[in-house]
Image 1 (tube, rainbow, N blue to C red):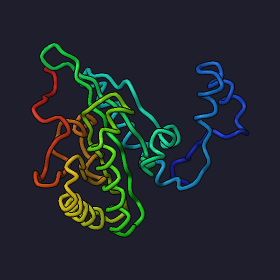
Image 2: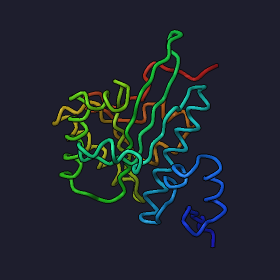
Image 3: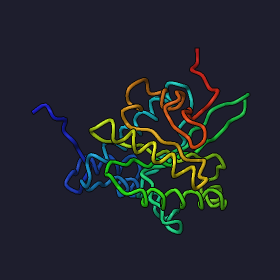
Length: 214
């Protein structure tokens, strides 16, 4: 009885649907309808999203865009990619606005390396062909792969394997970590702390050189 309850918005939630209709019209109402398939995966994606939202807010930055897998599907169909999310972070650097984009891939199942390899190749094609900049209006991109699971050893092993595969393929935009590392500190750590591993670089932060405001 101490397990957390999981709520979702379905067609049998009239008050929730009415609220969405009032806030954003029919498009928002349709986008937010959810089927309960893979709740553990959905909760892991939302855990990352909440950390990003809070981290950006705490740093005084902006989060102008967050898109779900359903919203991304049409734009990325040609590349056979369906990320778990895409977000953009805007911050000021030397008085000028800087925009960075991130695709999110949360992995819970023990899929084969072949699946990861295929995804990395497609992300590489999307980015290095110019397709990403054309579709998303930004040249700065990182692909964030987050491994979630009950046992700490399995995600750590898979992070190491992902690093090797990304290095072999030359997909230097990939970053790897596990969910426990992301949720162990402050929300801003997701953006500023060296919690991510990059091929050829080891542990890095998403925004090197940036510090917390005094």
